[in-house]
Length: 419
Image (tube, rainbow, N blue to C red; front, side, top):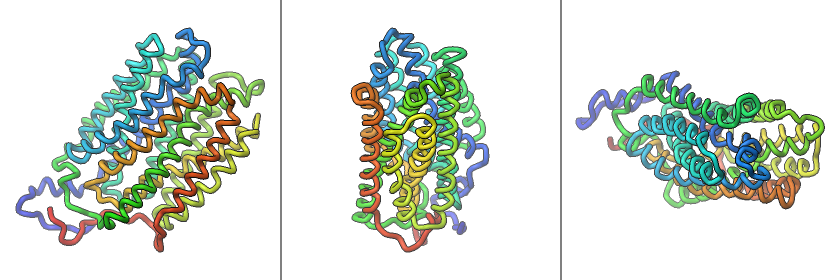
């Protein structure tokens, strides 16, 4: 990275803070936080049948819509979270994330009715909204290989999805559904303490740092933002439908073959672990090949796989689940990669927040619709609907500007930029 002399308005410690790389401990905790973010949001979906039985509700489909508040706030809360991340600081926002997630998860375990758990899950969603617009920009802000960094971070997030399946399944079976929230909540609080001790205090908020990336004109940037938001909406719908519905899909399509909840959780975790590694492969490619061509290639195979899965049962369905989760997870890094490619670090949390507020807010409908769709029409209809959504994603991605070179590039100071 090019060195620069301090301006007369800038203290030496502020310059060192601006260019110093993240420590391994901070990077590790930021990746762990991504795993927690996705894990916590899916504990309810994994344990919904046990919770419904405890609350005296006839079926899990009737309780599932009460979890929509968590996913709605996961999106809507991203807007203020991103703004605070840039203007206040990313380190303090991540502390709010760790301690807030831990306390909210334990609060869910204290509920005794459908509306109580709906309120508690909504609060969990508020704190979960912090990570994506704050944690990911914090992680990539000084990375020399942002594609790989995003890919590894995506792997961590989806390992959290896998952990939700296997850890929640085991805790529900051997301890009870309340423990499935309390144990991860305690881990989040412990991580918050570690993050406070190991991560240096920011001396300059991101919004006040020197510009490090040349950004395109407003018209081009608006076009890119519209495309990535639309693609993020459709991609997030697929993510929510699959990660919230796969557990019950396996339970139905493997009925009579595998019926043990812990074993079903382990099978689902294996799907998520293998799918998660697709993000590392995508991250490596993002540093080398044109982004649009890679993105189109991945989303083009989603619709055929969902179409085949609509009528599949038994182990064939399980094999198809590996395939469609690889391409669902493999498409996730692209929206963050687009922001890294075109947006300077001073603005990334705010741009991410705006994109996520729209995309995750709309895609939260998937959680609300999942139970009613399956109850009235079955998983076949749901999978065909996902095939249609995948085609929409493909059409939107084709509208991205063409590229002649590959790689995201690293953030370097812009010549002549004002401090």
